[in-house]
Structures are given as structure tokens and as C-alpha cells.
Length: 468
Image (cartoon, rainbow, N blue to C red; front, side, top):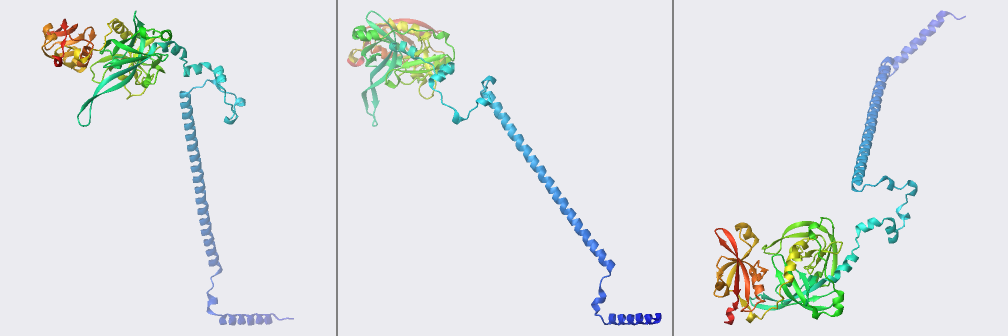
């Protein structure tokens, strides 16, 4: 049996050994952290890691939510913008070109552009003939009817020019215009045109629809309204030409409406007769009839092209009636789409009066009559500022027929042998057709007590001073 004391001794011996071993250990083995302190430190480290992980998770969640929110916001904005643009586009299209519901094809009938076939002209005319008529108006019947009554006019004149060194010289020049056959008498075919087309001419040539050319003479002019009538002798026309030409039908410009169709026929640029179309753009336009502004006319405005050479030609309605006499000089070429014509209701009585005048030829310069006055033009500006009548203001009366007939300084000449006088150029132009010794009626307005009284003076023309 083992004695408990022995066991104690052994235990004690072991304790002694253990203490001895501990005494011999190195110093650092005795500085180990107690178990409880180590455990607390690990718990603290673990807690810090958890906090960091929570912060990371929280930050990631916030960023994810923010990204989702921004994505939704951008999507909504883009959708709203697209819908707005689509709405505005549909609204604009609906205002620009509304389409009836019954015109929209079912989905089953919708084809792509590559599947469409280009229709022929006959198919278009059969499907929608009214649209084609509205876009292009056929005026062939009107033109065929009226063209024989419109002529081309060539004016040959002598003009004076000055050279670079100041030397003056004369040369022959030609200009082109148009005319309208308005009647005939026993011996003459009568043609209406603009005054500026035939003014200052040495000779006038008229070409008819069949190409025949004949000489013409001035029968009468009115510069105040830019109208003239010239005459061609019937004996100068062959039978074929007489059968080809026709007399124009004069309409009524007082019943015109803005927007109705208009056709212009004339000798544009001197190339021969041509046709342009348009509408009546405006009525009763107050326009200066010449560059000096000496005359103002009430005119028809049209967008039918009226080019140089069209002056004196016809402006027509769809019945083929003349509603105006075109004038390129009035509108000029500075503005596109704005041409002017003298209303036929204004022109008709003047043309009819000019048609009964005596046809006269220019006389030789040595035989030309002399009135014996000096004068100034009374322009529209002077008329408006001083209330003076339009015409030629007499600044001096020389020895001659005018003085003998009683003309005085300050008189205003308004008419010469029945033709209106608007300028000294008009007066000098008329005198080229009268010889010295002929007697003419000259109308003047004379101021008396602030008012003008009309007087008719019978004047016998004298000879030119150079020939005395």
C-alpha cells in the first residue's frame, strides 16, 4: 500500500522541481499578458472591425441609392424632353399641314419608301386633278386668242453722248418695247403703247405675230400718263398679215380683285413675244412714273414678270381681256416680283382721244417751228410744296410767236395742240413734228389773285434762230 505521505512528498518534490524550473526560465517568459486582458483586446479589435465594416456597408448603400436616384432622375428628364419635343413637333405639323383622319392609311397598307412605285402623270391627273389645276394654270387658250393682237416695237433714235475728254458726239441707238392693237380707221392700224417706248424716235418698226415688219408713225402721246398711240398704214400690210392679226378686247380694271390670275404678254428683252403669269398683287398703287418724280400714277401691281421690252404690252385676265398696259420703266428691275401696269379703265379714254389725232412725221431740223420761250419743269415736289399746277413754268418770253400771242412770264404751259405737257422735254419733242409757220393751240394757266385761270393761246410758230 502506498502511504499518503509518500504521495505528498512526491507532490512536494514535484512542486520543488516546478519552482526550480520557473526560477531558471528567461525573464521575458514572465511578462506574458494575462488571459483576461488578451481577451478584452481581441474583443475591442473585433468591435472596431465591425464598426468599419458597418461604415463601409452604410457608405456603399448610400452611394447605391444615390446612383439609383440620379439614374431615375436622368431617365425621367430625358423622357420628359423627348415627349415635349414629340408634342411640339406634332403640334407644328398639325398646324402646318393638317391631315384628315380618313386620309391616314391603315397599318396593313403602310409601305416603306423602297416599296412605293412612282405614279405616272396620267395617274396623278386621274387621282387628284383639282390639285394639279391649282398648281399650274393652263393659259394656252387665252394666249392663243390674244397673242395676234400684241406686237413688238423697235425704236431707232439718235442720242448725244460725251466722251472721256469732254467731246460730244451723236450715235444711233435702238430700244425695244411692245404694243397692243386697239383699232383701225380707213387707212391705218392703230397700236397703243407707252410714251417712253416711242419717245425721241427717228424711226419706229412694228413686228407682227407672223414676223412681218412694217414702219409706224406716232399719232399721239401723253407723257403725263406714259401713253402713246402709233399707226401703221394698212397699205403696208399684206393679206396674210391682215388675216393673222386681231384687235384686242379691252376689259374693265375697276372690277379687279387682289389675288386673281394675271397674264403678261410682251417683247421681253427684245427677243420676241413671251408670256408670264402671276396674280394681281395690289390695286391703286401710287407710283412715280419717271425717275425725276415729275408724275405720279395710280397703277396695278402684279408679280407676273414684267421685264425690259414688256413695256406697252398687255396685262390680261383669264377671259383674255386687256386689264392693263404694262410698264417696266415704272417698276424698274431693282425689286423682283413687283411689276406695274396702267389700269385699262384709266388708259382707255386717253387712248381713244389719241387715236383720232392727226398722224405726223418729224420735220427737218431746219424747218422745225420755234415757240420763243424759256421754261422750267414744275415737278410733283413743286406741286406739293407750292400748290402750283404741273407743266412748264415760263421763265422768259422771247421775240416770236408766243409773245405775239400774249404769253407772259409766270404762265404755266399745260397743253400743246391737244397733247399734255409735263416738262420742257415734252414741249421740245412736240415741236419736232411742226414746221415754222404752222399755227397751234397752246393752253396755259395764269395766276391771278392767288388762283390760276386757264387760257388758250393761238400761236403761229416762228423759225429757229439759227436759220434766220
